[in-house]
Length: 201
Image (cartoon, rainbow, N blue to C red):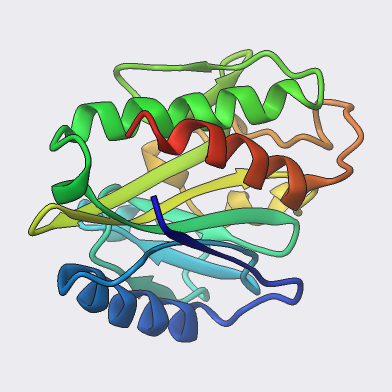
């Protein structure tokens, strides 16, 4: 598969990233190259299509509404985000398989850092000892899947106390750093694992 990988070393403003992503979606719908983007955002709170205002604890924060699945979540420096635009018309038209392979990507990425994690059928995302370390949110339009997932690496987990993240207890969030692991070669290892599992989507 002919896929473009993009890695941004400096945080990218959320709105700018989403505008870019949505333009890329239209290109892929018209036969353009699929796309994977590894990046970080400045501190931003986003609300998915199931977002509820009752999930905001700190009323001073602003929420960016988005068309991805899920509820309210946080992006901040030290959290790695992987956006993708994948054309399922040229792959398996199976959204459940797509989610499963994203879960496998995250689980196997975390093994680089000695972290054993698992998926949960009831609560989407990846978990370490009942604490969430990664969130998944996707949207599919004309069998083109986009948005992606985020992994807490060494971000400030205190920011989660301003919301009820993904409808969860905000104390049930962790990160690679919080698990006591060193976090080297994040971008390289992410790209390696993503490349391995893309053929299974």
